[in-house]
Length: 186
Image 1 (tube, rainbow, N blue to C red):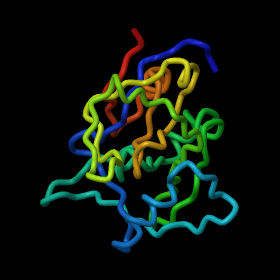
Image 2: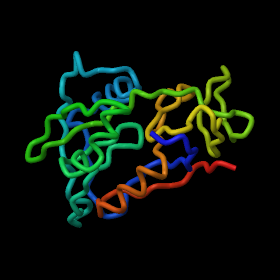
Image 3: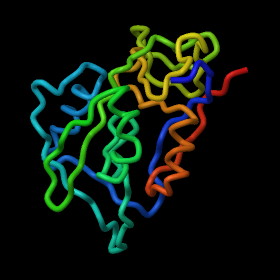
């Protein structure tokens, strides 16, 4: 882990690549609840998932991270091989049940109260809870050296990644994700 404060990114799917969704509709919510930073490995029951490899008659490309959402990244063995040590340092790789593919869901266990609300653009519910963040501001001291993290301010936090993760993903030639920079140190 470096002491350098790096830019922060959120992953998103690249157009034309496959998705990975739970077979049961209620498991979308179960994943929201369970992939929240609390360690789950001890009592984890693999969620039954399916790869979506065709959209409106068009074949989708194989992804090293079939898309479910930025809150719960799914990884194929190649991504686990490349990112595994980092992923294990910052969370858990939990198995999912999927015909025809060996997949893991990443549960980042670093939940850091790093949001600088004054430097962010935040939309709130009437009770004061945060509904959405359209511009992120982070406290550099809170994320210094972190490669993956979530924040406690949102019910379903995206997985934030550092520029080091983005560089490693790109250098390994992995497919299926792009990364949007959401914050940079001043």
